[in-house]
Image (cartoon, rainbow, N blue to C red; front, side):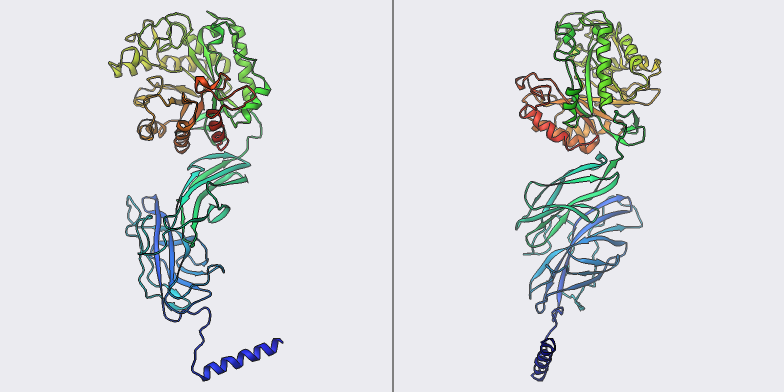
Length: 600
C-alpha cells in the first residue's frame, strides 16, 4: 500500500504538469506578504541601553499556507533576547518558524500571534528609548520578500494598522519591583488584563522568557512555589483570542537564602533599606500589639489580656507577621507610677521580646505614653503621669527611660527602638511656626505650648548610643508622625548610621493620596529606610490600606497595622476577634490576605 500511494501521487502530479497546472507547496507564499512590526513597549535601563517588546503581524497576500518561516535582520544596536509563539533562532539575523497551531494563514489573513523581546543600545545618552522605534526592512516569508507596507508604532497603545487586531493590555500587580522573598519562596503572581477588540485568552507569567504559569480567567493569578534563592526577572504576558500579545516591562525580584537559625535577624541600615547581617534587604512587616502603654495605669494589669505565649505568637506567624511593635509606658517602665511597674513591668516586656525573637519576629519597643503636664491643643488628659498621649517626650524622664531600654536590649540587634509614638509640637503651637516645631522635635528644650521641658530626638539618640547599643532607631515626624516633609533636614545625627524614619498613615490623616506619598514620603524613602509604624482606617474596611500597602511595596517601605487586639471592629483599626488570630471582617481579612503575599 505504501508504494502504491506513492505511485498514485506521482501520476497525479504528472497529470497536473501536463495540463500546465502548478501545484504550490504548503509552505509557499505564491504572491507576497506584509509584516507589521509594532513596538508595544520599550524601556530604558541605562542612559544608553534598554529593552523592548514588539509584535509581528504577518499578512499573507498570496495563496493559503499551512506553515511559515519568517526571516529578517534587526536594526543596528538591536538584539533579540526572546520571543513567543514561534521557534526563534539568531540574535540579529533572526529566523522565526511557526509552532504548529499558528502555522496556517489564509489568503488576505493576518497572523498577529508572534512577539519578540530584545535589547537596544545607542552610542549617545538619552532620556527616553528611541522614537520612532527602528524596524527591520527585509522581511521574507517562506523565501518571498514581503513588499507590503510595514509600520512601527512608538506608542504601546496605538493599533498597528486600521482594522488590525489590537493587542491586549496587561499590568503585573504582584510581585512588585524590588520585592524580596525567603527561600524556598512562594511568589504569588497577579495581573489585570483586557482586550479592546476581543477577549483575553490567557495571561502567562514569565521568569525571563520561561513561562512558569498560566491563567485563563480573571482575576489572573498563579502561585510559583519552591523558588530557590536568586535574582529573577519576571513579567506577565496577555494573549488575546486572535493571538495578539503584550508583555509587561520585566521587573527584578530577589529570593534570599532561608534563615536556618529560626531567630529574628539582626538588622542594620544599608543605604535606604534595612539589611540582615548577610546583606539581604529586609522590611518590617507586621502589627502593633497594644496594651502595655495603658493597662498598667488603668488597673488592667500588664497586657489587658492573657500574657502573650507561644500559642499567641503562632497565631501571628500564621499571618506571616515578621515584626511586632510594642507600645510602652514611661512611668511603668521606670517604676514612678502604675501597677505593675519597675522591675516587674520590665521583665514582662523582656520576656515578650525574647519570645518574639526566638520565633523569627523582630520586636519594636516604643515609648507611647510619657510624663508631663499638657493641656494645650489636642490634649488627651491634664495628668502629669503617663496616662495619655503627650505631644513630645519629657526631658525629666525620657533620657533615663531610653538609657535603661537600650541597656536591656543592646547586643541584640534584632530589636528595634522607636523613640516616640506620635509627636505633635506643631499642634501645640497651633501650627503657627513649623520651623519651631521641627526644631522642637530635634532639639527639645522649651517648646511653645508645651508646659514641660522637652527631650528632643537628638538627646534620645545620644542616650541610646551612650550605652554602646547599635540597634536600629526609628525617628518620627510631625503631626502625629504623618508629616515627614522636613524629616531629612531635621533628622538627628547618629554615630552608627542606624537611623530610619517612622511614619504613621490612617485614612483620616492629611497625607492620604499616592501623589502626597510620592512627594513627601517617597523622597525620604529614597535616602533612608522608612517604616509605617502604624497603618489603619477607622471604617474597619481595607480599601485605604490596600492602596497604601501597594504603594509601600513598590517603594520598599515597611508597615505595621494597628492593632493586634480583640477590641471589636466598632472601634475601627482592629485586626482580630481573638488572640488565636481570627481576623475581623473586613479590615483584618484584607490585611492578612495581603501580608500572606509578602516577605520581608
